[in-house]
Length: 287
Image (cartoon, rainbow, N blue to C red; front, side, top):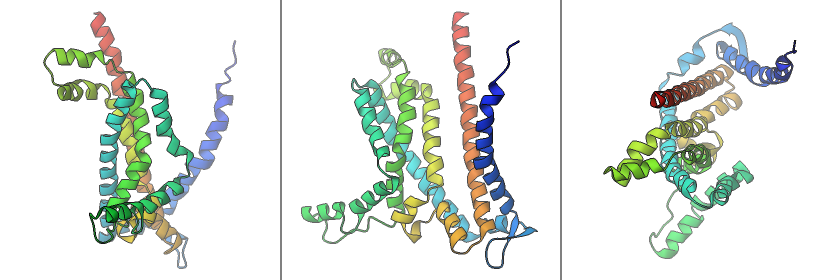
């Protein structure tokens, strides 16, 4: 009788996840139901004050701003990633183009943000370029507004959408597009009615990989958005370090975690439905 060594292999991973994922999340969840301490921290008394504070007008305004900037960024990312991934999948230089997509990961995240500050700043490249062309006569405030946050988030997380879309589009049978054109569809109709439905799993992955990090962004709105473009990540940092309201910071973190988990569960459900449909189609065709 063969001995099953699977438990021995999975034990280190389970311990690692328990120590550095499950336990910290459990602590955050517990802290969200405690009272704020007099001098910061928490008191060991059950309270729903942190969750009641979540529905305050100021936090709801920041929640709306976070949803707006994350949704707008995700929309722009998908609109840019789809044609880019399609072009790479049809190109004869796939490896070189994928290499160019991966290059930004070689540079530190903060350096890339500061590069955008150098581009969008009052004395930055864009303002200087427009002044030299005579298109403007004074500096334009490109930084420290929601538009700057959306632009930098779009740039930062665009590769995370291109890669799963490319992986899905590459497996697509492009002869179906030619068949649709032969049957009278325009190029736009063939892409809309044939290509997009067949790569919906890649599109959903791209949306998930773009929206979740954008929704929890901290460094980007802090550096290029200013106080007028705060997102929930900035509020968590402020409540932890300035006001020292740990229960409120934990409650916001819990909500962000639940939103992330919901997105992952929907993604897993979508993948399961897609795989079931793909397994049923061949059997139907064979019948």
